[in-house]
Image (cartoon, rainbow, N blue to C red; front, top):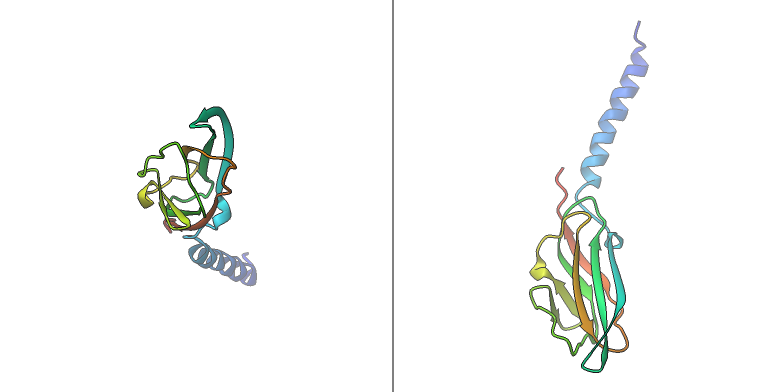
Length: 127
């Protein structure tokens, strides 16, 4: 014989887990965007070259990824379709989607290296 209170409790837990998943899904914190900067060993225009990799470690696609990049400059041209500087912010891939586990790479040449960190993104989790 099934215990009615145990069955009600199980249904309630199941219901609450669906509600929690629905409200919790759809957003990724900025700390799921990881940025690695590594010296390439090349010198461009008298400046060391740096390789940057921006990785989406969220389980959801993210778009409109904006990095804080105050004072960013380079003697090596960076493709504006990959990084476009707007004031103290740098927009990645024209605001396009970076899939989960995917990355965007670019290089620049300047000394010292710039400390880049995520400022904004829009996650696209499907519930």
